[in-house]
Image (spheres, rainbow, N blue to C red):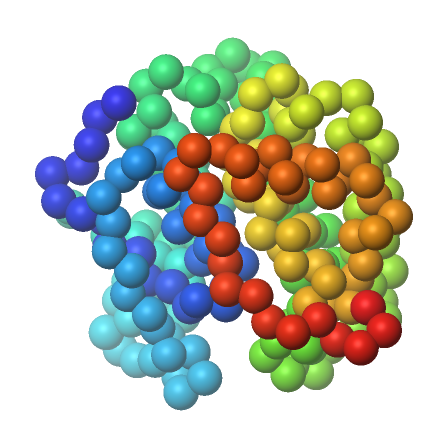
Length: 211
């Protein structure tokens, strides 16, 4: 396992699931890193200084030596390719890598449109169509539950960055009023991820009444 010359700087918000998936992977890889909180509520992500790091004004962003990189899934790919030469977290085999990429696409699409968006209303007070988001979330969780009935991790028998990308917004779905109770295989998978050496949780917020 290679290591960076100095700690990787992670610009994040402590309640951002996108930020947490990067923090989680840094910890799983046992890489040295420094957390730098960005005050999203007061617009720190829109300052000229931060926009030089990410023109979209979003967290997370990492600085690794002379590399500055935004977008959580892109960061996961970068870290896996640079710091995991074994290919455990991002397989080099084309078919296995494609299976991982499939779930990265889900993380950027239906996972955020469903559990992620439902949670935005509760945690950040954003005006979103929460019922539509909950419907997407329920459909996704049903698919995940069926998929995980036949294998321990999303892309096969071992954890990959697919599991890192999908974990946080799934684990925190109840914060958006989405119940995990009907999905036993999903709950068992969450427990397997949480048992991985180096796992770190994200701060939880209260579950809405009736979730």
